[in-house]
Picture: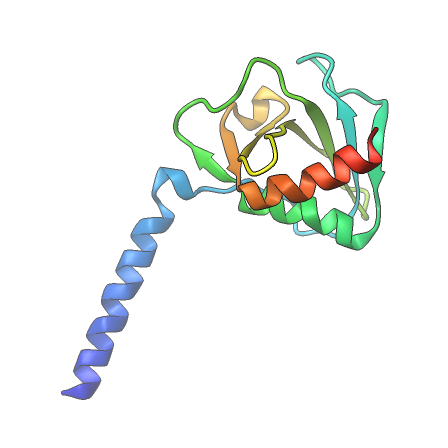
Length: 147
């Protein structure tokens, strides 16, 4: 009886977790399964291309991990959370000769959420919301080193 109850609970939990993964608000941004060597941050200039004049180049593993974690945990939103123009272009540069991921960033105020989107329409026009915790960590890096 105890074994049957345990199996039943495990089955129900699995079904519930699988259902949550397919919910729209839980999809996250994708990065390659490669080591990230650098995060380049530039002021946004236009929608047609990424700004190549980096304000900030993050290469220290602890700094890179701030952005990597923010990107990987940003949750897709059904509604349009973007403002008029992004604040920054973010380029994720991999250690191997992989393509660079181009991302737009709308940086929130301290204690607020931020928004990411892929930079080019081929990757979609979805927006991904970043927690206030990650916003605060990104703000520390961008605003202290980028100005």
